Image: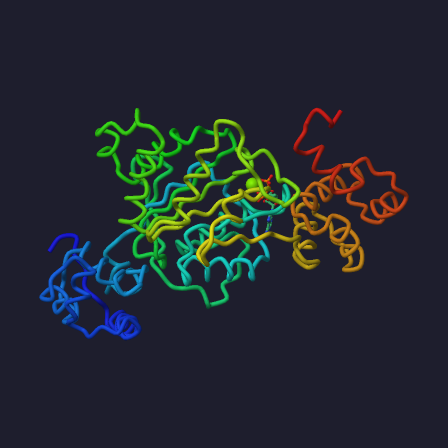
Length: 386
Ligand SMILES: Nc1ncnc2c1ncn2[C@@H]1O[C@H](COP(=O)(O)OP(=O)(O)OP(=O)(O)O)[C@@H](O)[C@H]1O
Ligand SMILES: [Mg+2]
């Protein structure tokens, strides 16, 4: 049967626990009714026979299991994941952030979070961490990463289709069927973004049926249908581009004309589906405070610890430092990876790698980019550099 699924042995154990919590027996008419199916199909499900994908998903959802991928047998072997990296940067070097990656993996893979924000000041590593998260979810290794032997195994052979953005991995260790990365840096109108996403999920089918001229409410409903049907990971980078700035309560509202992004977040956070939207932002969109429920979460990134900061300094600056010297620099820039990279490049190019001289200039307050705000301001605002 095409587009059909059958349960795994482990999957049936999970379903069994879930149906006990509901107080249903295995051939319960109430369960079949809640899943809009027949008792006969429910019996087939229990015999681990193939049934239609939609019925399979509804049977799982009726007992509160939204991650049907955890229940289906050989699902990942049958279903390749399609990844569109969009404008995502390809990090050359990645270090640290083990705890953050573990937390995000647990939230997304384990707890089925629907909406996750990575927050933090400019240069703190939000985009880099999001890239690493996606790489990890599709079983790719980052450069510089040591193989600890704990990574999930999967066939990570990657080949490209149509153009260089699309890659399909065979049997990856990911619960997702589709992964798409988009940057909001140029503040696209919501309609344009949704049309783009629908094109990705539906291929030419949805575009042919005329989604391009529709309003955002219509497009959003179509997107939610896709997010229910497939298990998608959508990453929206640079979400601060559509936000005005945080108010006194640390909550970001939208630039005029972008308020409908709030509706996107609200519907993804509230409605029933099996996908996840991850966004990176310097500010927290207000929906993260307004939406209830434990499947909407945010992670505020702090600076890197001293040893990771030292790796960045030494790699970028091509000099070696003592632990004590390094601690002063990393503390001074609050472990902000971008600030550390800029400082390291400054030491290398302007001070010929003389870290001692840098530290004494720092102490005397004689550096142009003395504090982290100066440094980042100059980086993000080229007119200040003269
Ligand atoms: N864990 C890390 N290991 C190595 N380099 C890192 C790490 N995190 C960030 N960097 C480097 O620091 C710089 C800034 O990181 P990134 O662009 O991810 O920050 P950001 O928080 O997304 O900033 P912005 O708010 O401007 O978008 C990049 O050059 C990146 O390569
Ligand atoms: Mg970024």
